[in-house]
Image 1 (tube, rainbow over the protein chains, first blue to last red):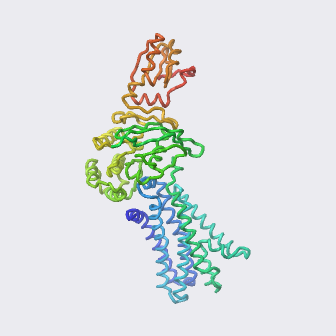
Image 2 (tube, rainbow over the protein chains, first blue to last red):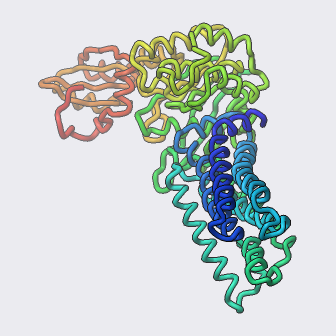
Image 3 (cartoon, chains in turn red, blue):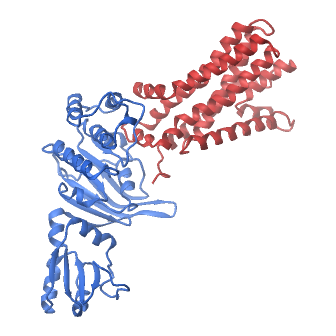
Length: 235
Length: 306
C-alpha cells in the first residue's frame, strides 16, 4: 500500500499544487480587493472548487491510466484491485480537500469576522468540501471503465450539471419529500446557502445528510472497485 | 517438482458480445517446458493469457495455473507467475531503479541480488526514466520484472512485438540464458514462429479460438510433410488423413499432411510416388492456419502456390 500511495502522489501531486494555488489565489485576491461582498466571493471560490476539483481528480486517477495502458500492468501485479482503488481514492480525497482547506484558511485570514463570523466561513467551506468529495466519488465510479481523460471529463461535467438540476428539482416542488434532497451531493451546500441568504433553518439535519452521503459514497466505491479490474472491453 | 501441468485449460469459452473468441480451448503445459503459443493476430492468444492471470473470466470451461483457479486465487497465481504483456506499458515517469523498488514489495519472493544481477547483465540504465528507454531496453526491463521474483512459470505475451530482428534474437538469448537450469516453465505467445523455433520444446497452434495442434517441436517437424505428386494423383491425395493444405501448381498436386506416417501406406497402396519435403515451423504454422483443408472433397477454386 505505501508504494501505491507513493506512485499516486508522484503522479497527481502537481494537481494538488495547482488546485491549492488557484483557489488560494482567487480567495486572497478576491477578498482583499473587496470587489464583491465576502460571501459572494467565497461562493465563487467554492463554485470553482466544486466544478474543477472532482473532474480534475477523477479523470486522472483511473481513465488516464487505462488509456495509457499502464492500468493493466498494475492489475497484473499480485495486489487486490480494491487496494489499488483505495490508494487512488486517498489521493483523490487529498486533491479535493487540500485546495478547499487552503481556500478556507486564506478566507479566514483575509476576511474572518469582517462580514461573516469565522464559524459561518468554516461551515460554508466544510459543506462545499463534502459536496466536492461526493461529486468526486460519483465521477470516480461512473468513469472507472472509460479509456480516456477527455471522455471521463465530459461525463464528469455532465454529472455535475445533472446534480445541479436534480438538486433544484428536489428542493423546490412541494410534492417531493425534503428527505429526497439528502441524496444530492449539493444537499449541504444548498442548506448552508439557504441559511445564509434567507436566514432560514437548514432543510435537513446535517448528520442525516452526512450519513446518507457516506452511505452512497461507500456503495459507489464498492461498485467501482468491482469494475476496476474489468478488461472486457480491451481485447 | 510435481508433474501436475503448470497450465491446464479444458473446454474454455469466451465471448465479447457476439464475438466468440475462444471456442472450447483445451491445452496442457507440462512443468519445465518452454511452450510456444502460436496464432495469428486475433486468434485469442491475449484473451487466453489474461484468463491465466485472472484478469478475465471464462464463460465456460476450466482454467488451472500451477493447480490453482486464477479466478479464485488471483493473488497466489500472480505471485508465482512472471508476466510480460504484449506491448507492456509501464509508468513512464519512473526511473528504472524506482520502478524496481515500486514493484519489489508486491512479491514476497523478490530476490534483490538476482534483480541486481539481471539489471547488470541487461545493462539497464537505472537512473533513466522508463519513458526514455529504447524499445529493446523496455522489453528487458519487463523481462527483469517478470524474472526477479523467481517465478515457477513465465508467461510472455508476444514480448518481442515491435523489436527489430537483432533485438528479438537478443531477447530470446537473454530469456534462454537466464532460465537455463532453473526448471522454470515458459509459456510464450507469438505470431513469429521462426524466432522461437530454436527455444520451444513444444508448440500449441491456436486458430479461431481452438487449439488445432499441440505437439513437441521435433515431433511436429518430423510428422508434418509437404507431398508433391503428379496432378493425376490428386484423387488419392484427397483421401489422405489430416490434409492441411491442398494446391495445384502446373501439372503437380501439392498437399501438406499432418501425419506422414499415416499417409505413406495409402500412397504406397495406390502406387503413387510422392516427393516428401520437410517444412520449417513457419511453414507448418501457415499450413495449419491458412491452409486449404477442404482437399478431400472439394475442387480448389483457384490454383495457388503452396
